[in-house]
Length: 491
Figure 1 (tube, rainbow, N blue to C red):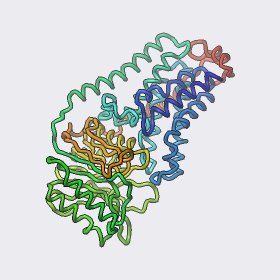
Figure 2 (figure 1 turned 120 degrees about the vertical axis):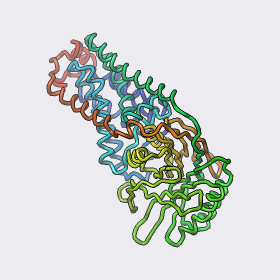
Figure 3 (figure 1 turned 90 degrees about the vertical axis):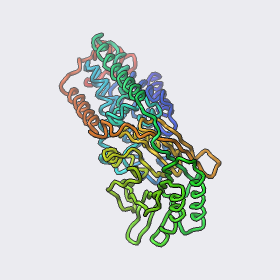
Figure 4 (figure 1 turned 135 degrees about the vertical axis):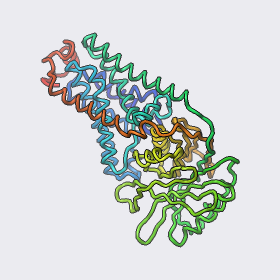
């Protein structure tokens, strides 16, 4: 019992500090290992339950967010917490079941594939999309995340789980030497290939400046204040002042989602001062506007062109269920084919992958974010940039305004929650990038591969029997008695 509780506590603590809103990337890789190492030594039910509880306890680092956020309805939030914990339990259960049949290599590969497969199905069915739990946690390690340019961030999720699963499989008690060697070589090869590919891709990165980009946000959270109100009018002029103070060479500045709330009477008047400073400074200003008409609301990302021409409106594509907004379905471009998107849009492959295929090299993304989750969501945007070969200018109203390059390197960022300054401003020169990636061109092929690999693992459970009472190497019965567990008749 002590060993069980120790493994549970250790995985839970590593998940708590290795994932979420302020993760330590080195701990992310280690977090699954304790419950995976324990799995051969306990019953199937115990392995599943301990893994489920470890993940559930680890997710308490985000519990307050899910209880308070208006962006994710509480039933969906509970579904994310409980569902992902159940999935982690299934991952460890499958690892144990395959290992007890002597299929160590499949035990190392199929459980991570099962995780990715379910995450992919979640994207297809969940109206709020997905924020990758493991990929975002290691997003600040560019040598790892480069694989997303080929596999999508699915490959990062897979690699982070494969490493501990392969190690636990190699250490399976009583396993045959050949099975250990084969599994260790494949696991090491995949991890090494990921790192070598990342290093080579980063070494070939061209950092030549293409355009100057800035993101800025008022550090006081105000969701879509009425543009006609005195406070909103003051906010507009404060933004004008901040834009006027930007250094020479800035071509695009991005303001947050929901900076203003407008109606048909106030829209033109509210945008007029920003259009004027855009023209005077020869800067494209991208601003998030919540616009209300008698029929419906729009959540716009509005480009105010540098030349003073008419505003360009992008309508947000993705919303939480029940949001009273018109959904967009069109790509909209600012000057030089800069793509416009909006916050939750980057929880999905589209529209950003479509922008990459259409020739964009930079995404201007007004975002809102909320207490606590700003850093994590900004890394979601960063990973989408790596996937597609785009720089991302992420202007969060409450969180982490950030600019990343097409290789996922953070060029500059600020935090709105820890500052006492009325505004945060960050700017950088961004490169044009390599153009559309393999993932941008071919989509979620790796997720489909994981679906097939997970299915192969589940089929193997039916077609390959477990040796009665002995497991892989003849020590299971002894280990289970030592752990105080009754030996099950099936894996």
